[in-house]
Image 1 (cartoon, rainbow, N blue to C red):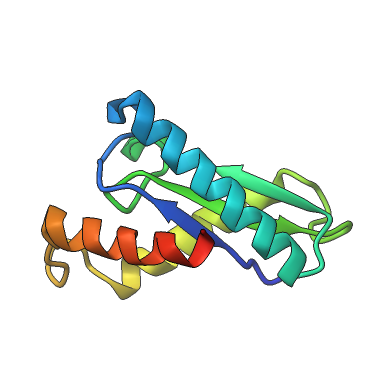
Image 2: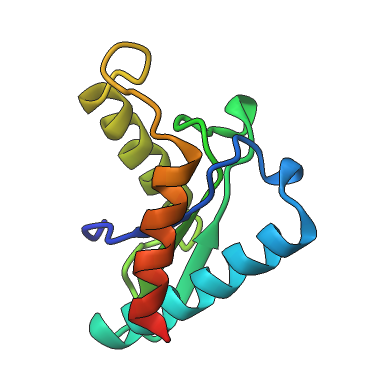
Length: 123
């Protein structure tokens, strides 16, 4: 299996189903722009976009995020192995950062400011 390179387009909401229409549109628009840049940077030929919406779907980080993964031919023996790789990365992240102990939530204002700052990079 190849080394998994991924970036997340992130929302402040816990579940995808809780997003407004505008937030959903913004999230996917962002994922599209980031994906386009990643595909070019990694000389990839395709992208995998994945969302795990809720703990029973494999969501280990309690906010909406889209996994954006540049893909190349033969990067996985079987194409669906990508999902096992995503699960493994999520487990590694959860072990490194015990969300119940070490994580403190940022304010909505802090996250909005960061989003505004990053948005300027893509205008």
